[in-house]
Image 1 (cartoon, one colour):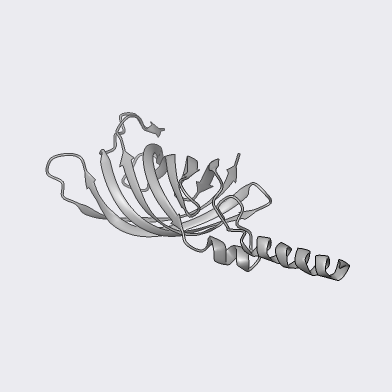
Image 2 (spheres, rainbow, N blue to C red):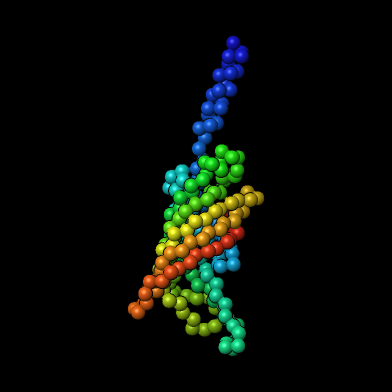
Length: 182
């Protein structure tokens, strides 16, 4: 009888373990910093594999050289909404890899707006052209040290400067950022 109970409990344990699905975290709030900017984001889970990321980003610019009287810098705000599909979470979990804090590969569609509200700069009267873009991207996100992460993404899409006389243009999106999840 003991052997039978042991075997049944072992089978039930394996069955319940094998039915565990990998899924996204309910909500992530964090910051990421990289060579091409810094961002504050919120990534909310829509289902086990889909999430919706909203973020505010600061894009850096720097100029200087013989044609300018001084070296200048600027930080321009941008706002984006990005639905993401994480396609390999279950495979990562089955291989025993980390899936915490949405650690996996994804494809996404980034919709970004760059307004001319303000520019942080060491030069006066700097303005940017209002722009909207749609960029499909592929990316990967990995976590280390519990709350730290790094994320790489690359994509190519279209964008338009919201002034008369400008046509649609190709917009590349590539970044590597290191961040912290709160």
